[in-house]
Picture (cartoon, rainbow, N blue to C red):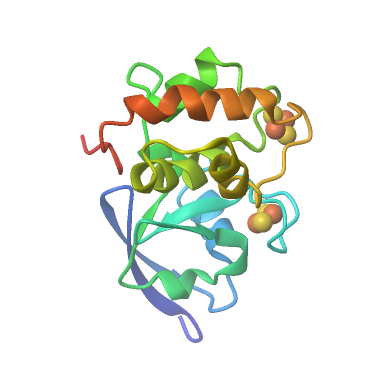
Length: 165
Ligand code: FES
Ligand code: FES
């Protein structure tokens, strides 16, 4: 169809080809076109961090990217981390340390923390605070999130990225 862009992108280890409108946000592409609703949208202008995904392994706010910008790149969403029966260590730690309440912010925290913990295996309190400073949580008061990060740090085992089935 005229005006559409033929987007080829790898998401969570799977290649997708889709014709998309150039104005489509990456967050909307993931949620609406691919059905990956684990990526949440809160503010939709880059403030809250709820929409954080990995873009070629680095955290990025999917509400600030157009889907077409992901052409030829690798995207990882929270669905690529683990499953109910096979949680990623960071997910396990959030569960054990009660690092979430409503859970709306959680995917963004997880996707921010996976690369951080792999680059900083033994983070200080200050480094953790800095790492999550771009993610907002309206429920937890952050203490349990801090606890979860400390719990996860020694268990990461360089498990950087998506679990591949
Ligand atoms: S929804 Fe993207 S930063 Fe808030
Ligand atoms: S757990 Fe509810 S916003 Fe963070």
